[in-house]
Image 1 (cartoon, helix red, strand yellow):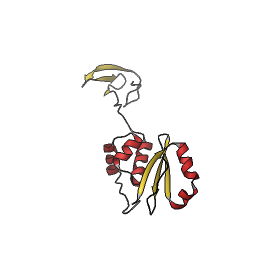
Image 2 (cartoon, one colour):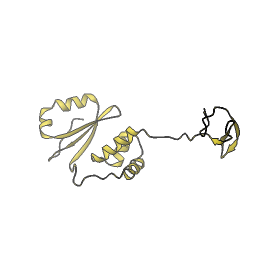
Image 3 (cartoon, helix red, strand yellow):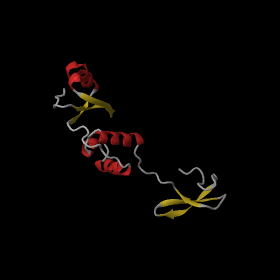
Image 4 (cartoon, one colour):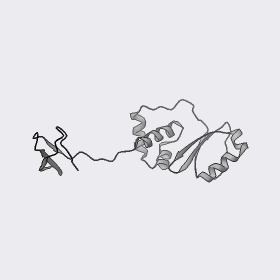
Length: 142
């Protein structure tokens, strides 16, 4: 709800009609007419940052959509807006896996896996996204 005039910060105002189904107000102090501030749906900056990070790590738009729960179109728009480009040849043989904590611990305890694989671990929505990339394909515990 409106607490003060956006022009003079006065706290006394009255209703002054409707404009396209939005309530209009008039400030008693300065006479300024204004409407209710737009309350839109906004995405947390952390989600945008994480989506861009996952994109740079090699995930597709649809994979990011399934992991973060945001539209793949939104991810595409963020990539265009921030002018993000993937480096050429980055993470060619990469695979992404979404694991619960217990499976991640099993994976990390496997010494042979760690010696043969490059990996990146990110926390995503209560799970861990493990991005593996190695010269040869690597099987992961499911």
